[in-house]
Amino acid sequence: MKTRAVTSFFFVIIMLGSVFLGQYVFTAFYLLLSTFCLREFYRLFRHTDIKPNMLGGIINSVIIYSIIALIAYQNSVFFHKLIFLLTFTIFALFIHELFKKSETPFSNISNTLGGLVYACLPFTFFHGMAFVNGAYNFHYPLAFMLLLWGSDTGAYMIGIKFGKHKLFERHSPKKTWEGFAGGLFTSCTVAIIISFYYTELAWFDWVIIAVLTCVFGTIGDLIESMFKRSIHVKDSGEILPGHGGLLDRFDGLLLAAPVVYTYLHLISIH
Image (cartoon, rainbow, N blue to C red):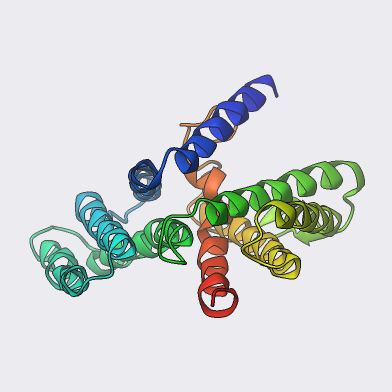
């Protein structure tokens, strides 16, 4: 428990620093983080017959993230044209399999591309939150993290004390409906507090974002549990003492960030 608490403390400090230190640090940090998450995803298959193309996947991940980040900085035609680089780099993954002696070439390709969808694209959406109005504004990604942490903390505390009814026992035996309700309440409370300081959105918009964060963050957690059970691993890694791997820590973000960005982009921002 002490190790977990110490890790959480430094984790929070680093995450807060990533948004407060400006747009370039923000962009670079989450590019690095998404790369480490993708590497961790691919390494989960090392005890199976499936061999994703780690180098090819990471190269494509860096290209995808970087191009979308450049478009966020400056929405120019040139940066949009760079997207067509992916025509060559993604199809290179297919060509690479021609030269490998593998009995599961399309499983290798599918999981290489699956890693991009699962561990790269969510961070591009999270990065995009900071630029949803054009100029860099750390309020949205910081608020999202606070809502996600509020949801996780409330679910853990209420679930430990009052949890009786299993939420989805087949994939996550410890999660309960009581814990989910506690996480939802805590996240919505944090949203109301945020609305007093970050007035870009009305209070009800922040509450809606809190609900989306809690619901899809929980689903993201369940999906990661399902994935790990399917390949018979307990933790996605060991980089965070007491917490497991990076994917274990960011499982809620991976599904919630795209949904929240979509809400901000299509509904709330005028």
